[in-house]
Image (cartoon, rainbow, N blue to C red; front, side, top):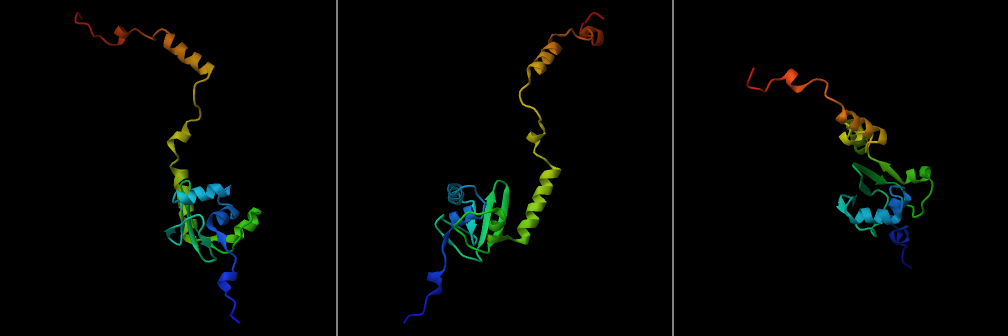
Length: 151
């Protein structure tokens, strides 16, 4: 009798399904799309959505401007609650410190576009602007400056 092959009996989970189950992406389609775009690396190499994930594998995920490096601790093909999903992976210490440094940098130097609190002017703003434009000047131009030759 042949000895049982432990690798063939092991549970296999696709990369896109694991990312969805671990709650990195909202849908499995989104996780597959991100993998196809090259934003997910498995053990330092680009992977396909159908690649099997094993405990101990290292994943590098780019979500927005954040880059997270996680180590796979468990397998699941079923999406469950966030506390359970958090048990499936462990983020590396280097990744945590890098994310904290990036957050601090964003806090100290915010995006310039975020400082604009309003978009288009309201009716009231428009009336104020037109009122300023139509208002008579505070003083005559020639009172302050002389551009004439007959002084």
